[in-house]
Image (cartoon, rainbow, N blue to C red):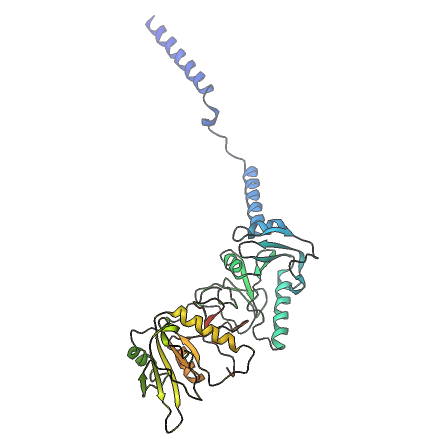
Length: 376
């Protein structure tokens, strides 16, 4: 009897176990192994999805990609759209084109679907070569065209271009004078003589920052003299003075209304002052207390000369962190560039070769550069 009760209890337990297993949450139940064909199908689907994301097939998909980095609203594909002149863009290899608005940067962005990227890049290179032959040395340096897989993006504003430079898109540059600055990507283009980069060049000096030597600085006029003389400026004879000094052959930047009105704390003039003989080799050294004021006043002076005959006796302003030098001698200025000084340039539409230094000035509409046009 005892054995019968044990067998009965065991049978009952087995039945309960079977019932519990049958009622178990299906989510916790073991899943059957996927078949090889199902795994392959899932892998193919994932690959197709990734490929679609990497290579937009339509303007709408390309627009969606651009919008990850900068606004691109109100996409219009009508070639007669008057918001932007599309005739300036290379048509080779393009199957469709649209224009959207970057309301943040206040400018248009042109998106083009490209069926033959190599042909398109070759056409861009040919266009740049033609412009160079016509005498436009800066051809292809300041109108960035970003290349993606199957499409290009041409932003009209520097702010939008800088935002797109953070994406996987790359700027095509075919100007032989261009060198990719240190710290930026340099990738092989589909045509010889061109490169792809994430560096954005800009006429307004607001493009990608370029690494360069630190700007010059000094704690006193004497320190400034030791910095520039005799390497660039001959300060064998130097007079520290707040008085306005000029001659028929040497005109300073700082005016007659006092150095403090120009943001200058202390001032000296190097060279031989006039007297029995004419002044010779005059250059002015400035210890600056307000660099923005100095640049603002100098900008006004430069703009007043636009359209007029250049006065070769007028000095140019070269600035550092808290110092400045005024000189009308090109050889002196070239020496100062090597010592960490850059010239304040405020002329409208100024541009410089890619190898030149261009930094943002403290006043809008101006840049700091080491480039000078011949005869300036």
